[in-house]
Image (cartoon, rainbow, N blue to C red):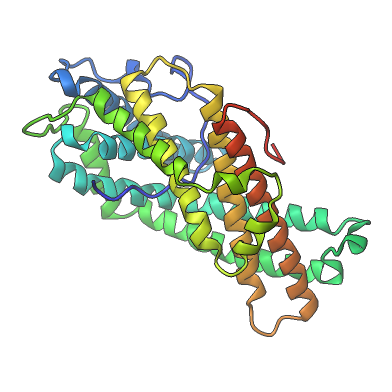
Length: 346
């Protein structure tokens, strides 16, 4: 099994008119002859997303002077890039493997480039909103961040504004690079021909079922017994020395849920995703955001020579985001069991 693609970063966008909820707009794919049996739905999905990719790229270029339009075009471009990469990953046995293995890392690279600036901006907004909430009138009585809150907010703003500027510069550089032009040429070729493998050991349906099994196995390995409470003191204690080790399996489940959903869009494009999986996806998105925000707060607290009150405020902020992590795990556990619940902040 090839390595999994990197997790997507940008949020989903509402489907365009005429597009099934969450699925590719196959009406936009070129009217070419259908591919051989096992690869037919995969070829149709790749062609449709390649067409969507090229439209979004053109929109992004034409909207260069309009920030709102540019953001919308970037979301559409990232969405198509993610789906192309996921389709190449899940249905690799039906495709020319050398071609798929060459194209998929380039799609992953572009997804990251498109997402980083949005990711940093959203993290700053989340942390400052949390800091403001924790600094309310009743916060000192609850052990809130106190007088260090203002300096903690300023430190986070400096760090993340610099990171956002770097991400924006990296995006501009990428759009002017030969690497992007080569990727666009590869995607454009999909409108005419989908490179197939010499043999097809399994059909698209069987490969999609494999994605569902991998998701189920990964969920079964999660410590869902510890996610049975909205705020879990045991898990919070474990998060202090090594948060990454316990967050990684949850991030992996989030990725596998994406791959499962995209695979279902390929083999059953007219089927809408059920509320159970939609709620699970929302919970895992919240989990990812809170986990990364907590990591940012902890990293800021390690800044040399900051005042003790600033470090304390960042510690309170870190604990708050770890509580959000546990709340998201609780919501996922309930959603996976078929009990759809909301996540704080939705």
